Image 1 (spheres, rainbow, N blue to C red):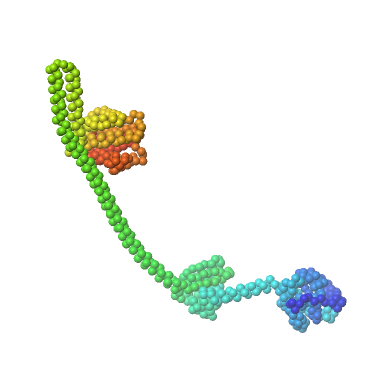
Image 2 (cartoon, helix red, strand yellow):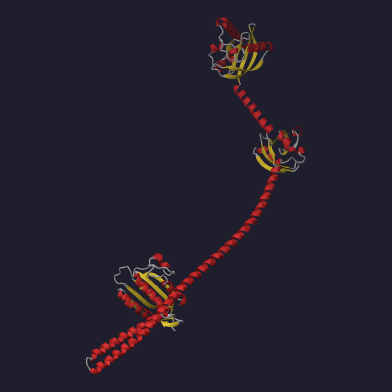
Length: 558
């Protein structure tokens, strides 16, 4: 009758009977009100012959969701989802056998189906047999039980099919509460397969007797888990079985522990082989690395030596080129000196002849007695010019003549002679040369090469004025003593040397002039002469609105 609509009883048919039965119940039992009306349990009074609900307490009205009058018009199979014939058969059997307990499903007014537990028993009123039923809603419990059954089924399936061994144990304690042993309560099939022990043999056995170890294996650890509830995972080799296990231990309840374990004997063997092979390969690799490192270091050393050799050869080649350049320059200077010597030889005879003629002219004019003073003055001036020309030729010839050995010479004389050679050229460009010498200083070296250095510095100073507008262009040449040094400086007021090239001005072939105006070896050769040939120092700096080159050599006082 699970799908039938509730059927309504005819009031004329049983109204009088129901009222009389209820009144009789009230008259026979004064406690009926407190037991029936005030109970929180669902209570129904049923006619077993027709299945009609004769009475229902407030708890029943609330549970089924019908109004009281509506509920009393229904039959019991309007609530029970079983077919009517099955319900009537159970009512009939109940009258015959007495009180019984049933599990039914009842439909509520709003269609919900509830699991109910019904306790029913027969009572007699005025000779008529009735049924008194107490109904308990057990829907939540049934659902929980069903969920538990399903969960147990799932876990039982997992328990029996899992690859890991499983064993459940109880800890055995002495009178003082100390753990002394443990008993195996249950094991799964994998336990039997892994250990080789049969379930019938191990369940109920003590660990101290089962494994042949005398003392129960790992008792302290297992008892600690059973007491604390803290799980533990560890790996061990169990000698009685000759196997290695990874064991997880947990406690389902105090005093109990369960072990889940897997056989890792083969895994440990493979791991050991792998570690051994890794160790061998690592050692081999380390040896190879050492060998390769040695080869790399050897190659690095060879490459470094090769680079050093290449660099040395490059420096040697550069020095050779510079020496060739210097030799060429010196050769040119020597050739120029030889040429000037030839010029001097060619000039010397005409100048001597010119001097004799001038002197003869003076003698003749003196004999004539006319204008003697004028002739003498003119003769003196002519002889001075002839001497100056001859001396200038000697100076040029000496300047371009290479020195053979170091000698002690006057720095003042060499500087003065060099200034005299260019003074006319400087004046022609409007540049004044100021020569300042506080005392005469002597140095040891090559006077002509020293003169060439001073000449290079003077010409650099002259070229610094090119393309610039300076109100009073001047070059100042100073000779002074500084402790044990003779110091010669050549400075100008042409604006100085830019900072970005100051460190490069003595490099070979470095020049700020055009390619047709300089080779870039003048200052390089000058520095080489002073520092390598004369053990001195040549430096440059910007001071007083211009550049200053400074020569420092030992003062050769004796």
